[in-house]
Image (cartoon, rainbow, N blue to C red; front, side, top):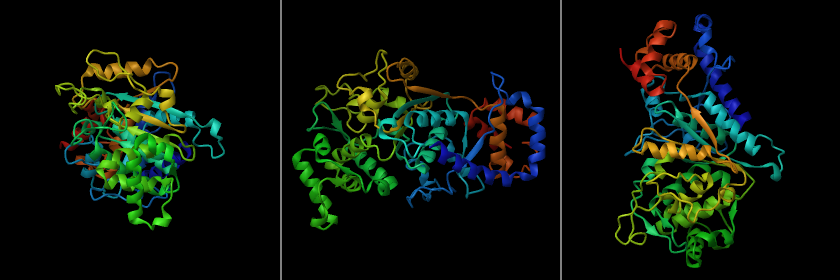
Length: 456
């Protein structure tokens, strides 16, 4: 992941360097004047921030889909991140929409991004092509930080780098929507005590098939795996539906993962079982690294919005999200169970994290400070991660922008044409007092910094 990601970053950095050659001398002088700002607390010089352009990746993955952008101009490399019709996804997408340059979609690769990637690489050995199965591992990472500091952007950078590096990535960018807008819920007859969200499962099947269908069309789900999540009658229906698109003689057991996802995306009654069969297969294979990235992860620990009389006859108690089948695999893998009053997520019926983790890959989850979640839940979740000892969870905090990061963000705003910097010609970015003023009024957060640059 580190090798391929560095190539992507280098390509994007070359483009940015060409755009700013005419101000290199002035920027160098400004950096020299602010030398103290480029030093961290231990007296070491911080790395100069670089940008990854997720819309112009020269080393794009094999998937033709991931090399394109959607109708809203959002690169498919970070699919399914999008401006949802009900919920937003932070300000990163808004920045791209406001930019005059519509040919570039840049994400700043910060120290936090590097820290997340290094945790994944160190644990999985995914950069070594000759690594043996015994050397392949898995990592758990929890990303924290104040509101607006760039957690969503950091996750998007990890998703893009992982996909370019050949990882199969399940990306869940909108945890708040998923915990509330599942349309309807029903008991899982095959697995007592669990519940299905058929419509969300259909959505998940379609997303994974669209983004990684070419990567999984040679992988198969064993009949034993399918029996864990589907009844015998359901398995017969899956095979029958797979036969609708293929000659009967061409469809054999075990089914390939792309066929399972295709059936799941078309049938709400089979979607949960098909999706979970695919996820279980990916979690237990060592052919390709498998990465799960979940944003707004603390939303899954807040009070639920799904009710069913099978769980509570009075239909007053919400079903905990780790009892919903499609959320259970990655919640079990993270293995976080805060011990705070009011939290309904418990270890009951949970698979131990050491057994629930994938054999080769990682789970990266980030909390959100902008959603309606009790602060005590979020704090307790972080404390639970820090308390893990046997199977440690790597906690990475995304901090406010440093002075040098503010400078580079402003350079990027000027290059891509955002707000009043569009016709600024360096008046703001080369004025140390103006840069310091913008850093001060924004508090070092990306959302407020962009707002400050929009005001004349």
